[in-house]
Image (cartoon, rainbow, N blue to C red; front, side, top):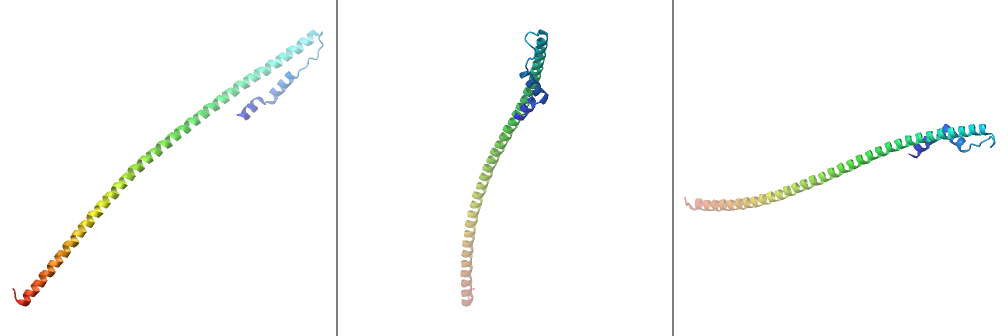
Length: 152
């Protein structure tokens, strides 16, 4: 914006007119009313032109600054919306992570229960196999003894 203000008022013709008006020296004598009046009229015209130009440049600068302020406000609002969107996405990801973590924990607990059930069932089947093996061995021994002794 500093460059904009400088460029708005740094026009060479405008600066020369202002410099001329500020440094204007009346050359006519006090008693030469006609020339003195003409010089004063020229000075007033020059000062009015400088003032009109300054007001026009000021209005242009005000419009430019207002436009820049509007643009900055829009950018700020866009940034706020982006932050709000990112925060909402983060919160959704946290919720999703919590749900996923809870589901994973339930799956682990279910797998642990299934493993315990499997281990218990396997131990029971091993025990039953051992019992059946012992019964079969006992029956085989008894059958062998009967065959040898002729129990049949």
